[in-house]
Length: 462
Image 1: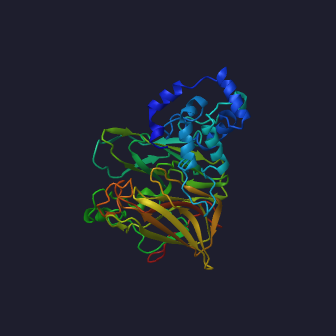
Image 2: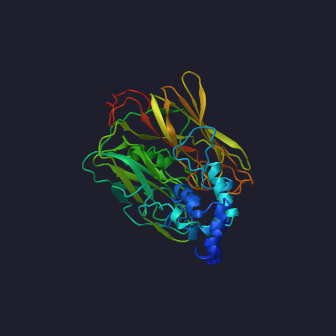
Image 3: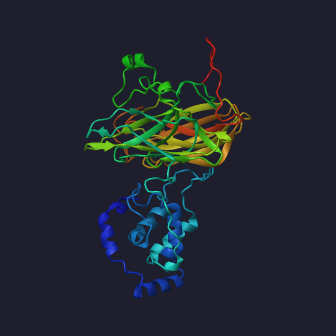
């Protein structure tokens, strides 16, 4: 929430004024309830438990817990203001385009309850009306993982400067193939962990089916494409850009962490494949904050008990050719890909940095129809969301997906690090990216299917 929600002193001042729910206070609550004013126990708590408690609880990303009346009462007016204008809970998709299973936005009725409760004096109500508080596994959003892995070292982040991407191998030590139905990244130090990308590398190379082909020119800039040692020695990298290792070293992406997104979980019968002997490769992006810091990020794996009927896969849509002029208020760049098989698209996560302004994704089908499948008119770098389609999208072979990202490099953008400079692709927060990760499945493909090796001299796509 806004700055007023982070001023701890107000908790003490207002909290000290709360009267216990007995005597005159209880009588006031009864009178207010009789007048139709919502109460915390009957009306407000169910809304907060359902939509806010995941983050607003001890040890999580939110600055305060909102589980009890004593915790919530000091923030009544702030809750009213933040929810009435849509700032909280954070949700940035345009409701006119698509329906999403993880939609956190409040209904008009819920916003009205919170407004009338705050305006009516924020009464507590009868304790008998209070529903059970939600329960959580301490330290994890998805519950207790089946397997917990972590960085092999306590990584030391310097006080200043920029830190190139670090890559860590984390062996799974699995002796048989496993199916991953959920993954959660738990940063050891949120102050300096900008993002984490988790990939899996099998014990030996194998060709797996893929469902998309990127359009020409959708590459990451030279020096970051993972071309091998010869490129590392010849390609000059701009300040702030890291050298990506070759794809064969990192393997296939399976999840990650960014502000606002740390986990994924598939519906029953769907999972990703982890080969016996597989190694997780963690791409760690650290940002300095003025003091030396230490991090030891953990990865929680949630394993399926049986082989799934659908194999989930993760892909990326990227265009590294962005070049944002100084002061430009509405620069845009597009990225495109085409399905090479009938696929089912499950979810999408757009990613830009502080100049990112908005996103729009369209699907053009083989019959010529075009649909807007996701629109994010107010992108927020500080709360990035993986948009999970309520009804996964069926995309026939030959469907073109086009993503357009808009950027604001003007003085009107209060988050802009420096509107006086032109901006290109770069790893650091003060630079920019145009990147989307997405989860999909290939229709009609048996889980775990492997393609035959390419014959010498054969061409082909990915």
